[in-house]
Image (cartoon, rainbow, N blue to C red):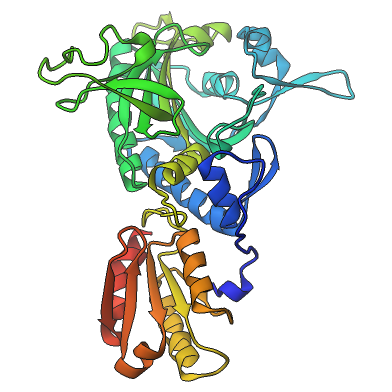
Length: 420
């Protein structure tokens, strides 16, 4: 992509109505456009990042047997009334049709996925099964805040699994947990699992996946010696006390942001829809349901909060909009521009994702914009590159500078291209 043709442009000024770092930087760098409080449109650069996050979690869910579907986001009110969610869920958007019928905008999909599963799961032979979708959610938040991390419209992967026994659900949860850890790692983050109250979704215990960040909305206690982690609200021990799991470490308190969750829904939703299946003896049984959320747009915001610096965004390689930012310092049709053009052509042919800054701007402006956009690697084509045949290659995350000969450039970035 030639930057001269890129739809968006960067801006120097910080949006006056944004206090969250993620929203400030994403708007300045041209990744998102704010429509109103809690609602953002994703522009070309932002959509590339979001799509990569979605594809990572899609690959992880497919690998553990999840089957992707796409569910309706406009829900009949009857489904929500059956589960008592119509009057019991305070963030539910409700719509009155001109035909006097009532609808809801999906804030979760239990009321849709349960009747779908009911139609196809009739025998124990059909279990277990896990269905997921990646799509939009709508919640009538009284005060949307934290940029794209807490909005009224947002992206999410939600999966629902149906099981014969509690043991089978808990076994599958452990499988999902490992895949979630891998997904967060691929997105450049380290997550912890905390125990928390199930809230309006479940009376049973739930699990939340947290990333430590000062921009978070939760306080957690964690042990550095083992994997123990708990939300402060449900922890039986306090900061500085011995870890209840390993007994070796002392609990530390930190601010964290939720990026995923698991709810043990039990038999609540199947019971509401009279959903049963026949077991091995031919008796009617009610399946046990698990729900697994993964915030796609929220994770994008957390990446910004966690990794950005004073210069701008810093994207991990697997979710960056491009692998390489090629910055040419030439003018018109000079030798510098010709050298950059040739390198751009070779990189694209090799399958490397490149944003090519071919604009006629001062070097300082180009470097500042490159830092703001946050692509992992910058290749600078200036006079030295023409004279010596070596290109300055800069790491956005570390600032490390290397001089790489022209003949070695492609081999340096082919692995990056295949991973992205």
